[in-house]
Amino acid sequence: MSAEQAGRSIRCLVAKVGLDGHDRGAHVIARAFRDAGFEVIYSGLHNAPEEIVQAAVQEDVDVLGISILSGAHNTLVPKIMDGLEEYGAASDTLVLVGGVIPDEDRDGLEAEGVSAIFGPGTSIEETIEFVRENAPER
Image 1 (cartoon, rainbow, N blue to C red):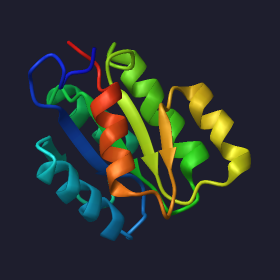
Image 2 (image 1 turned 135 degrees about the vertical axis):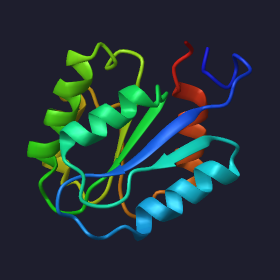
Image 3 (image 1 turned 45 degrees about the vertical axis):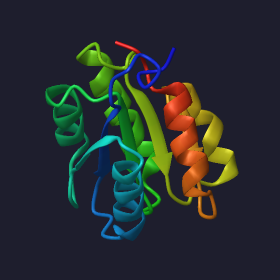
Image 4 (image 1 turned 90 degrees about the vertical axis):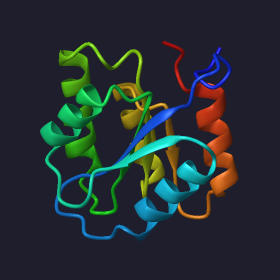
């Protein structure tokens, strides 16, 4: 059963990690999530992995959406996943990655605990539906 099925709103953190300054996609998805009825927190630009982990834990989010276009996903995403694990939050946080992720890197990110990867051209509706169906019940 998802969080939404349990009758509560889904709480999401949309985060930009590293030195990546391209935030249009993060803004679009944050607004779409808000319009879909989710509670949304946007991290702003240039966050260290540790800052994202702290925000996710402190805000007790159901969903962490990581937007990354810098090409550093194989370095930064595992640091975030390790941090969530350290705080005991990895098992009850749905982690999504959005950006240009090469096919050869997807399996590694999923092995780290990423639930889904959404690349360019993914419909907003598909992303919202995935969150609705998979956000953890707490």
